[in-house]
Image: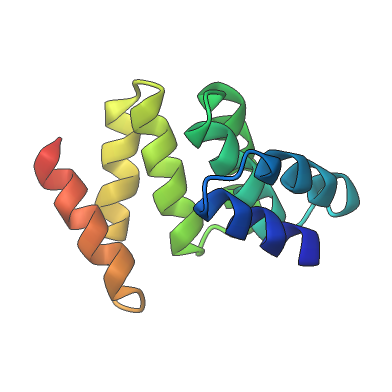
Length: 113
């Protein structure tokens, strides 16, 4: 998890080494939804949206109730041109009670579609 958290922080700071650490974390924990999410999201943000989308779908299959992962999935679907898929994910997120920041972002994104 340390490598995963380091990758996340480096990505937030725009450091290109984030991908390397995320990939290492994935090799060590290939079934951890948070590790898969981190790598997938980094790939989406840095030009490999199709591969990132596949990873995010896998992460969602492990933890379908994880709203942050679902939001990343919706954004990846948008980036790869699947507006209908993104809309479906965002509509689900727009109704959640336990994650108001995710809900608010989903509602905003739905208005922009």
